[in-house]
Image (cartoon, rainbow, N blue to C red; front, side):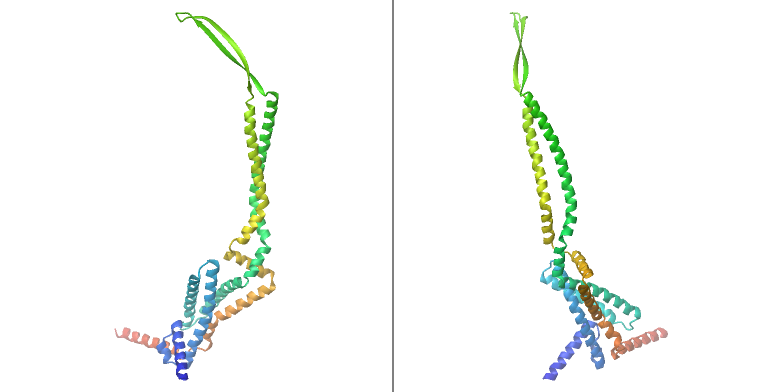
Length: 327
């Protein structure tokens, strides 16, 4: 019973390997154990690479796109499918040329950089947050510089208007103090008419009276204007005094973007030899893992499965050539 279970498991492993790599299970089943081992090696390498890129896809989407678990899992599956398609280009190549191997190496190096960066950004999350807090002052100073210039410009404009309004009010106060009342005159004309309606006499009377200086009302309006200017000045002063704390709190609470964290990670790697060594270690490890399929493809030479594929191709070519010659 035990041997039967092991055989079933081995057969399932080979079937899964054929499904993933694109090999024909019918031909592999009739091939030698060496060909089946090659399929298993390809499958193991792809599963290892796929696991890493599943984690990269899941972490990237969930962290930087705020996706839920379902979307993140689907993103990880998409990354695994992409890895399988890339590795199939190497596995299914009949004769792997040097430029194909070079292209796969360059692609593996690029994938290793991306993978190591995403993984390190997750692993160095606390360090990135600490770096952000330590450098918050520098970022905040840059952000508030433009706002401070705007506030200072507005403050000067309001202050100039306030000075002018105060001068005008002082002039009004002096005028009101000198002339609280203004003497005015009113002329009254009385005419007498006869029975025919003709004017017989005209009598003009001039009356004098005092009225309140109209600048008193202007003075009240000017006081309201001055209070408005002073209120606006105080508002700007309050904003200037609180802008640093407001911008710092806003900066620390805003969500991290991928590029922002990438810049922080770059600064951490540049300033810390230990972090740099750890990143290089991850990068080299991922490059070596990416090269597993390439190493398995060229390490043991051609298998009888590949020779069988080549033989079938040659037979079909000869048959086509013979049909062409007969015609």
